Image (cartoon, rainbow, N blue to C red; front, top):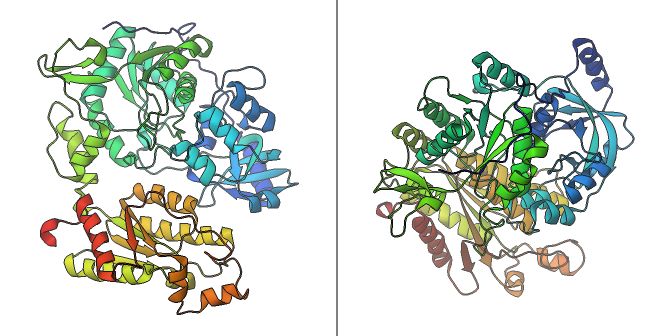
Length: 581
């Protein structure tokens, strides 16, 4: 197969990549630990821990910390650092307003993991409020929050960015798959020890199947290189298969290659799903890890399609941008088209090699997930038995998965009544544990101490979502009933819960005047009288769902009818077996 390759400037000499490790020596480490005691701290979120780890290890060389404002503006607008060095993705430390106020004026900030472990000290640089709309449009080419990168930027990231140089105290701690975790330095040392001179890296955030094996075989043969399977195991796209399952599948795949031809190493990368820009970013990261070549797939690092079914990025855009940047990066780019199975040839071929009238077969990621959820057959030509066994073990049929039913609507719309009815029926019809999180009850316990400001309401709803996601992750059923007035909070919950199980959003739709007539608590009357302020539907907004899975019109239908709508949806989605009902 003819493959166009954009070549690097020169083969690596002893795999001497651009090291800019930010870890300090022991004497400085002890000094920094003492400084941390007297400095304010930040507890980093998972994506920030991933970025910090690659900054400290040199995976993000030549960066020496989180970007300041001028560096950020330069990268967003022209894909280059201030000095002109190619760099396509802004690496920023986003913080919320209370933290920005708390840190203002500090000289240094202690950066800690969620457990409180000190990872690094940041020397304070710029603190500013970015233009997110501009960043979304230039980096992601869209402001659509359905795009996972834009959704994170708009709905989950902090309001302010904090820049500054870093000094590393210690790397993040892991207790899984440590034999496969490498820094740029240890990985390059492994290449030297194996005698590998040319290495082609394969990026993935999904399990590998027969088509991926064929792609990597062809790429390695074409450029005369050994193969590095280098999956991203940091934060990836919501709904992706967990990295534990994926790494076990990669271990199986590795045995399918001849001895000393393929190596597995895990990359703690938080993906942005930024398409063409991200393809260039991935190539730079692999260059820093000592690779001479990098495979770029079609729609590389793209999030798929928008709500209207249109792709966010043109199919060849990632190829073109990566190829154009290859010489400047100093790495060979190996572009590959999608592969399909040709039963007549009994092998995989690129889509460009299909003969007129030739039969081809494929199983998309969506179709694979559906077959796993439905416990349907997956053909032998698609994957390997040991990989499919891992997937079926970790991703049981949908009727065995956990799920969340989230009811949202105005106060008095009927959410709690429907939730109790659904819970009672599920307990009658199944043997599974069912947890009910009613808004009023949650306020007394999980939301204790929160007020009714917009920020506190968001915190309350997201706390409910977090707890519900844990229930679903352990294959239980959670039913949540909360006003949840803001669309952004509901979107965050959907994304979080989708990682763990199913999510069914129920819009309990009742006109405001009907809700006021049902005002058994007297809340609307008190709001109308000005005794209560910021009350949803009166002097605070309720953002109705635009794409709810179920809409219950409680003005015209009975509780039993609304309940049956929810149960019917669960049956249709496969979370309840028809035979059990």
